[in-house]
Image (cartoon, rainbow, N blue to C red; front, side):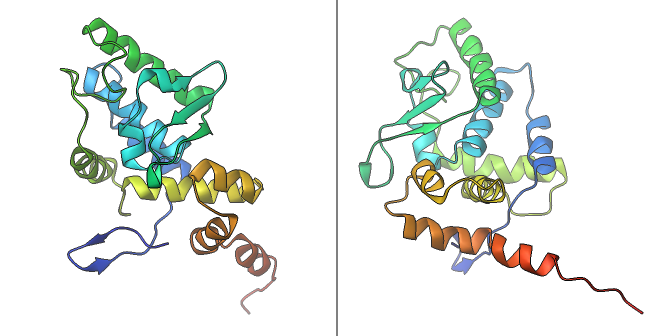
Length: 201
């Protein structure tokens, strides 16, 4: 998989490290409402591997912290699926829900909404991620699909079954996921070459 194009150019996939993701999170305020919201959105993009539209279409009712699930009602091809999300990400979401509740927002407003309850625009996220990447001192291209790539690569490195990864990403088939992983995380190649011993003389 290649990253999104810009003015006719196709960019190679760039996987983020955990340290780089943490740097992005530190660039989001823990107190200002927009910062708390953006930290929660970043957590969902990174830890659930959702597409931008899938994340921005979520409503509070679609999340179940106790079960550790997120219900994506409008995935690619308008197909619904349920994905997993860890407790750390849910904790960030809870802080945002607390902030938005204090502003009088309720379950009828999208989960990741503006401060007056409107749906965040995809364009906002696309502009915001490169901005905080620059602030964090990250030279790689940072975009929502790159966070999805990063999740896939991490799951592959952790030895997660390809079928599980496929369902989490919302791919139509395991074959699609296999091609995807071979591009973003060719772990068999990396592991084989790393085992070779060599010393300069």
